[in-house]
Length: 323
Ligand code: FAD
Ligand code: NAP
Image (cartoon, rainbow, N blue to C red; front, side, top):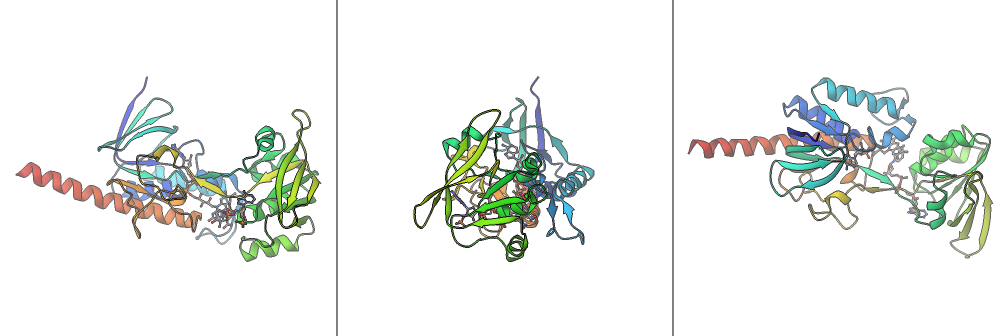
């Protein structure tokens, strides 16, 4: 039977942003509920080594870090819910959100921390071969390509990290990039160029993933040179698309202001959105930095902004009642 859950602070998303907001919110007495969504722990659950989250001299693992954040949030009083929000009503407070389970979540304030999801190339052949050789997560699927030939598409941090990770399983990794320089951090590029297992194909874009259905799946990638237009074929068993992410904001379209790229618009220097009492943090509102530490930082900001908002509203309510 569907249940209605009420809280002073409702948080959507259990990545670094949502969990940091919950930690601060719980300590401020807002008794947060976190609705975790389809990826509990968020994007860091799909990676291995995290070397740049402050506080750890040695490399930590993404899933371990997120497990610690969740444990800390629960320890200070956060309630974690296994549900995904499918409908929102932000027209009045408390805000009413409906979960996939049918349960309703009411929040006096709402913190949106729904993050971002993998971007795909949008090719028919990609759709056909997803899960049959084409993937967006080397750390999840790389193991299946032990001793085989693999390719990574993209030129950012994710693509370079995925290529480096895949060298744990394969001696034949190709990275395919549409330009002639990477946008990945210098230190990652240095590691990539130092590896004798990785070959770089510059100025190439994917025309088509080639292969049949079961049991063979992907057998190659047809490439087009972005300068000359020349077509070529790369024989591979696995293709990993690593071309970035798009913000998980479809749910809020028409309910809250989004910017031109679909990110939740916030007032500069704050996490306040176009709807009073709704705050946004992490990758869902940040297209520039998109780091675990910045997501956690804006999660903290969202909780502080939410607490101030509630204090002001509750003070006004008391004043009105006294009149
Ligand atoms: P996310 O981590 O994207 O979490 C979003 C959350 O929202 C998820 O829990 C999801 O289930 C939930 N959600 C979505 N929709 C709904 C809904 N409708 N209802 C309820 N919940 C919902 N950053 C670093 O600083 N260091 C690194 O080493 C690093 N490595 C990375 C490696 C990879 C492969 C990737 C993809 C990213 C990496 N990043 C790294 C970036 C970092 O992971 C992100 O910046 C960070 O996770 C963003 O946190 P977030 O909380 O904003 O969102
Ligand atoms: P990104 O930085 O946006 O890079 C996306 C890459 O894919 C770019 O090289 C882009 O090419 C390419 N691309 C985009 N669309 C394409 C298309 N249709 N066809 C072919 N190539 C395409 O995304 P990201 O690498 O996923 O990183 C996202 C954020 O997470 C970044 O802020 C990053 O710093 C962070 N992150 C950090 C770490 C870390 O700190 N270790 C690890 C992973 C991610 P162009 O360069 O030509 O635009």
